[in-house]
Image 1 (cartoon, rainbow, N blue to C red):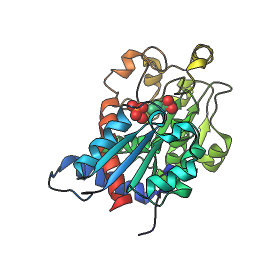
Image 2 (cartoon, protein in one colour):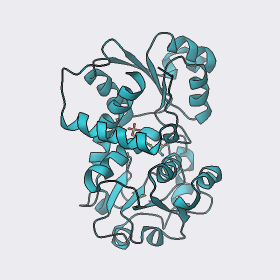
Image 3 (tube, rainbow, N blue to C red):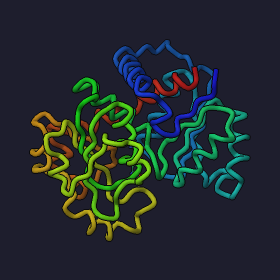
Image 4 (tube, rainbow, N blue to C red):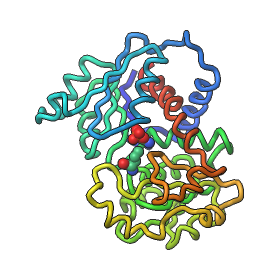
Length: 298
Ligand code: CP
Ligand code: NVA
């Protein structure tokens, strides 16, 4: 079998993402505890940053599919003492069957993949968060059907989640309306690659006008904690509140990858409101990633 990595959403085609979502829903609805295709297989999980959902969903997913997962922190391995990424990738991949990394620099994930003899999964880098988009898209498909031809508003930071939504818009053929403050726009190369799937708006309300889904994320991502105050000023006016949701379609959904800061990027009324599907999104990390592990390892 040809070695496949999942570094960005674009490592899958639109058809493959749709097939993966279908499989994730099957695994969710018909859980068979005797189905253990990953028996004897091991996933190494390297976390440079904190995690609740990503760690638990990958670890649980591996166990449910019959395998095992190892939690590795740079603080407790030689990675944190300067062992080259290239050497670490060769050594770790010689012993395990798949590697998931959560890193600061995206180049750490790509270099790891270049030197790994087993599939490498991006569990979030500063550039992308593709596993989250699998869960988000599964959630939309479950509730509203195919997202092709629909419209989505991204409001807030032009960050790793925004970049991955931009890729999803191209791959699954939906319209993405973006409203970000000056200086916090997404990477121009990623935007350019999406062509007319992406449009920019001055205000959250304009971006949300008549959309099927409103999405946001924290104003300061992991590693940007020192910019919190400066970002709070810059993002004032980019909060998703009830008036933003009212600009969207009546049945529009609200998503957030979590953790959420109520009263910052979205009001508590929206985060905990009837249009919010945040906990279904979080649970779907487990199901979507089980389908991903199956695709890459079986
Ligand atoms: N959404 C997400 O990736 O959550 P964690 O940081 O808890 O893994
Ligand atoms: N943009 C956020 C996502 C957290 C899941 C971060 O990178 O911290």
